[in-house]
Length: 188
Image 1 (tube, rainbow, N blue to C red):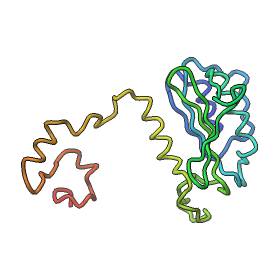
Image 2 (cartoon, rainbow, N blue to C red):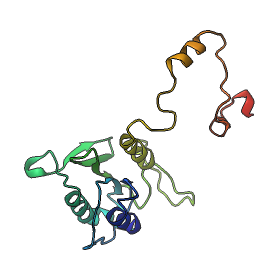
Image 3 (cartoon, rainbow, N blue to C red):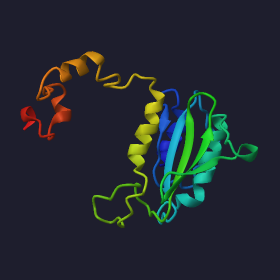
């Protein structure tokens, strides 16, 4: 996580979005210099027993929101806190250039990626209401691409007309690497 936060401070000319997960041990960077606005979505468990991000995440957030000229919509520029689910709340700051800053806290989560179990089976089972940190970050970062995403604009009106013109619906042969294991006859 220190590496992700370091990149947020020193690689904004290369990377637009940063999503550190469950950690923030004493991040301080007096040389932090953001050359263009970044977006930041961080998640942390309130019971993190390794990085203790719940106690330290405020330092990084304050640094990055200041460097990005972001402020909250609350009194005196305070961040607004929104419940994303029964177990997750996120503090949100408004930023002037279509970027965003957000820190999500997951109630009772230890040092794990929210919404996922560790492959080594050392995670505690968690409620399904925990925010899926990876999915959420990708969804938020999709706001930064201005319609240039792969498959954006599909299906087209022509594709929909073609699909409606026959029954059963036509099978698609494009992108077999995505369709693999989809029970599509040509990928079995």
